[in-house]
Image (cartoon, rainbow, N blue to C red; front, side, top):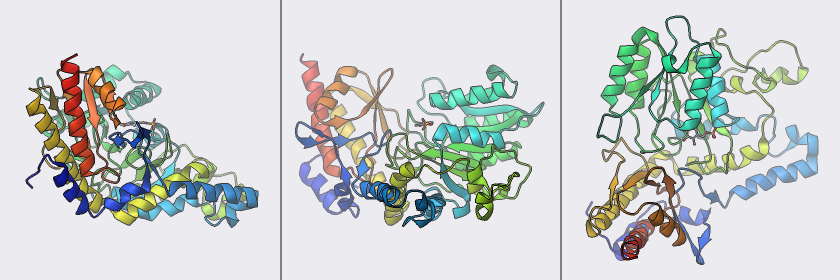
Length: 428
Ligand SMILES: *Cc1c(COP(=O)(O)O)cnc(C)c1O
């Protein structure tokens, strides 16, 4: 498509956008009396207007029914998480029995590692990406230490080559083959939070299995952003948070995936709790644990219904639109943002460089921009002028035009503000 850097062109793209009405379904903070241009849906998604109704419903049931709400609420609390199975499995490409919602992301990765990181003498190593999200690094370090290994020896990081911005798939596959029999687990972020690179999850999962390892994915930046086929790719387990692209509110509940092939395996250790116990017999308070079949069998505690309510609002919204429609818009919108960035860059003499892969399939919504000229002052200028981005040390701003609520005109407007910011800062 031939893009143009004009308001008329952007407005024309918006007019033809099948998802255009969804922008009105979200609440935007305001700066200088105008709704912001919001690029940080990869960090905290905006609040959908319909969410409040879902929360109010629980508040009202609690007020009117109190303990009876467990069974008598319009959406009974005791099995509230079952409402997620169908819509959420469509988001991540799973069977309904393979997904559940519980706890928070890092907690779920820890719990899933109890089942799927079972190091033995000889086979104990974990492969992850270099510069993984800090929480993932701390989690992996503490897990290997818990099992009596040293992180220096047991955690193998795969990084990018000198002078390059992304990790090559071939290098990951080679590293897996090289570790071979010593490899117990591959655990990588499906979309790198810093560069926005989307890994070839299918090929990496296959290679991990060929080496005899388990393969899990942290899908924090992938869920609700990229096409996932967790079941077909034969992924062993995965977890994601719901507050980034999935718009469910700050620090909110996590989703987890456990492949069907592990559901029958009674040998897998797991840290159990009463909400994972046989549903029909849960309130008989029996002494021995009989897990629910499927991912729900990994549940631990009584459900945090007040935090699941906003997540349900969001998941139902995703079901209404479908990942394919979101991804179709995402690709054009992100390409338009890239075009706008290159236009501004050309007018301002190499101020910055996009470090996100430009090949389709290797990126989702996010573009990470490495600033060579103005750094922090430019970021501050953008914030003051109603463009919300985020800053990552040493010199990167991340821009994620979430297709649910970002428009083409937003991209055009952003280009104008960016150009003005660079010009202003150069002359001061
Ligand atoms: C956002 C993010 C997290 C956050 O984990 P929480 O347990 O929800 O705080 C973890 N890992 C990755 C890769 C992330 O992007």
